[in-house]
Image 1 (cartoon, rainbow, N blue to C red):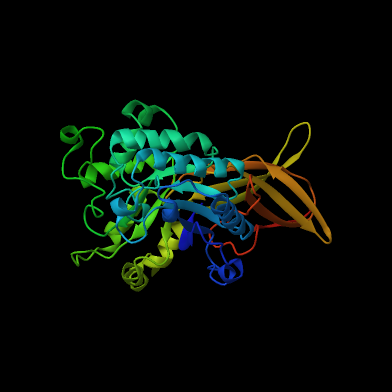
Image 2 (cartoon, rainbow, N blue to C red; image 1 turned 90 degrees about the vertical axis):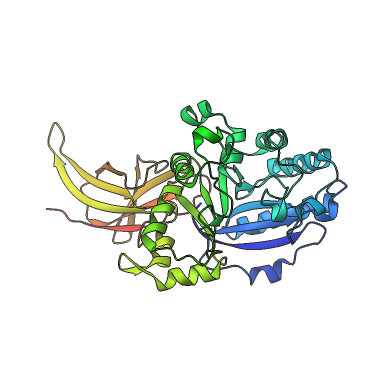
Length: 397
C-alpha cells in the first residue's frame, strides 16, 4: 500500500471493457484509484448488474496485482448537490449495498475513499456533510470493511467529528485521510483552517501548523495520501519545505497524473543527489533497507552460526499490512529456506531494528525475501530489483 496510482473511472450502469482496460494499466504502479460512478442510480437502488460490474472490476485489478482505492461517487463534474439523491435514506441504502458487495469479496481493496457524497466524491459541496450525517454514514460502512480496509475522509476536521480526542490518543482506528489539495495553497485548498485548536475546538479545522502536528501523529497509525497541486497563487515552494511537510503527513500514496505542473516541477528539482520526484517516489510509505550485515559464531554446548541484520525504514510512512520474511540459501542446485522472526508493520520512519537468525554451517548465496502475508506479494527493499535482496555468501572454513 504505497507508491503512485492512476485513476480508472467506471459507470455503474455500463459493462466494463476489460480488454481495453488492460492497455490502460500503468506498468510501474501497484495501486489504482477506482471511481465508480453510481449517479445513474441517484434515486433508486443499485441494480444486480451494477454490483456485478463492481465485483468484476475489483477482480480485474486484484488479478493484475493492484491495491485498490475505491471511491464510489454520484458526481464527476463538480456539482455535488445537483447530482446527489434527494433523500439521505437513499444515500444510506447505496452505501449499505456497497458494503455488502465488499463483504462478499473485497478482492484487493485497501481504502474506501469518501462517503459517496460531494463534488467528485471529495466530501465538499454536499447536503450531507453535517456531523450527524457523517456519523451515520461511517457507522453504516465500517462494519462491512475488513480489518485491513481503511475508510478515508477528506479533512482532519471531518476525521475528528468521527473520532473523539480520548480515542485518538489511546487507540487504533480504521478511519484515515485523503488530501486532494496538497500544496495547492497554504491551507491545501481548505483542508486546514485559520484558528488554533484552542479557539476552534476538537471538531473544527485548525491552523496549518497544528493540523500538521495532528497528522504527524495520526498517520503513523493509518495510511495517508492524495494529490499534489500547483499553487493556485503561483507561490514557489522550496524542496526542503515540501520534504518536511510530506514527512509530517507520512504520505504513502499519490496521484501520478495530477497535478502534472507540480510533478514536472519536482522532476526539475534536485534533492539529495536525485530529482525531488524520484526521491519522493522511493520514499512514499515505507522504504526498507538493510543497513548492516554481520555474521557471528556463538559458542556454548553447541556452536551456532548467526546472521545479524539491521533493517531500517527510510520511508515517509509505515507498513500497515502484516508481513512475513525468509532467508533463502542457494548452494549449487539446492535451496534451503529459513523463516525469519520479523514483521515489518508499524516500523516508524528512520527506525532501525536488529534481526537475529540462526544459520546452518553450509556454503551458498544468501538472500532475504519479505512478503505481505495476506497475498504473498513481495515487499521490495530500497534498490531491490528481484523478489529477494542479496545479502552475501556463506563459506565453510
